Length: 134
Image 1 (spheres, helix red, strand yellow):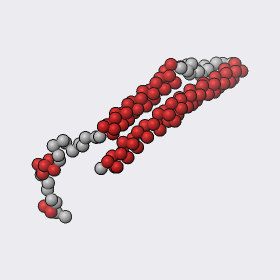
Image 2 (cartoon, rainbow, N blue to C red; image 1 turned 60 degrees about the horizontal axis):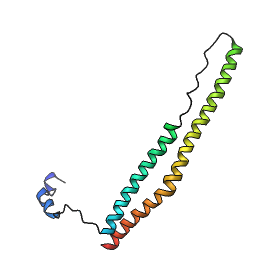
Image 3 (tube, one colour; image 1 turned 45 degrees about the horizontal axis):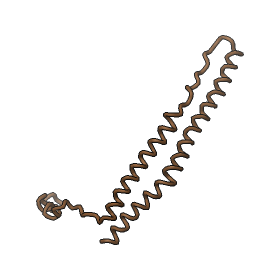
Image 4 (tube, helix red, strand yellow; image 1 turned 180 degrees about the vertical axis):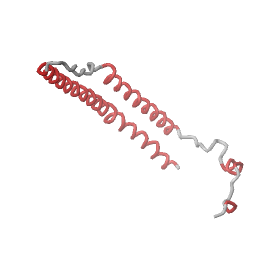
């Protein structure tokens, strides 16, 4: 297909087709309330997620990461230090894993199982009532 065969549309022709309201139709009052409520619930989801992150990772701090033992001339002493380091690294890893699991459980409890179903129900009402109203 040559470039001359492509139909050209002028911007003024497109603008003539768009209504003076900018192509946005006014929502009925109940849908407007549902839309506002959906925005509020979405904001609440963001606030709850940030609060869970702050509580889980900023307020409750892990102890510092264990430092590996310095190599010394005594092999027996170094072996004892290496074993102690391995134990403390394992404990630190378990504590870090518990912290992440706590954050996930809080998110699932607060957001995924309580707020998110309400949000989807509100969106279902908004979009379901649009189709019935048209």
